[in-house]
Length: 322
Image 1: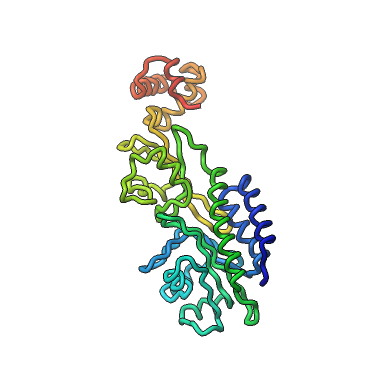
Image 2: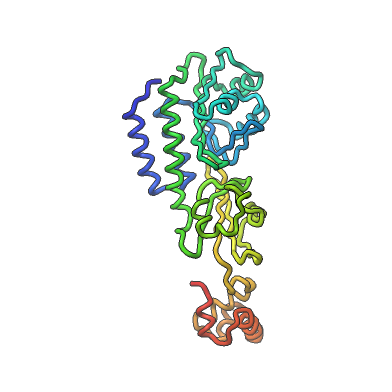
């Protein structure tokens, strides 16, 4: 398939424009689908991975025009993946595979024949000192389909590099604006940082150790797959974990950190009471709104005051987040 610089330029322009308005997973899904029309592939497998001599870790992935069980099938033949072998030998290359070529393994033949993948090419955007790099494995079907030319491979590599960069831009639409109080990251299910590490470290880097690398520390990793808000007393932080999955199946974990406030130490019911009282309601009105006895509200008010170290309604209002 012939590709040229004008097609690549047009793709990158549209990609960067979309990055300003889309969330990260939506952008990546759109890019892979749009690139299929430009570069001429029938289906693809894409996401973030770490390729090493001792094995490949797929941190997060999705498929385009392939069954969802593709990943499970690949896992069974991963040790015979010729594309991985080529990449390990030369990380700067775009590995290719031809079902009718001379280089074959049982695993590659099984993968190719099961899904009708005749001509394959994989490009990865390597990021120094990072264990999660964006990749696209693009596939063409049919015995007589065109092979991957050098120009096609260069086009695919450049596109992958640009998609990876655009994804980091689009992630800002998903993550809260970083300030002196808050930072957030997208993580894989393995705890590796996909996007947001630099911002997180700028704010909370003193809690990381050198050995953590680009993975979140164990005290945070333990909560990654537990949705909701978590009080981390020892670190004096609050972590909010939220799974994010696109309709295409690309699954990531959004994790936000902020400093612990005294208000966070209140029970859920005490927070409800504090919010109503801080709005100016009396104990009797608060009891009616929350459906409890006024005496219960008075008791909870004393508990709230004690935990916050205050003794009046005006001080309470300063502690209650808007």
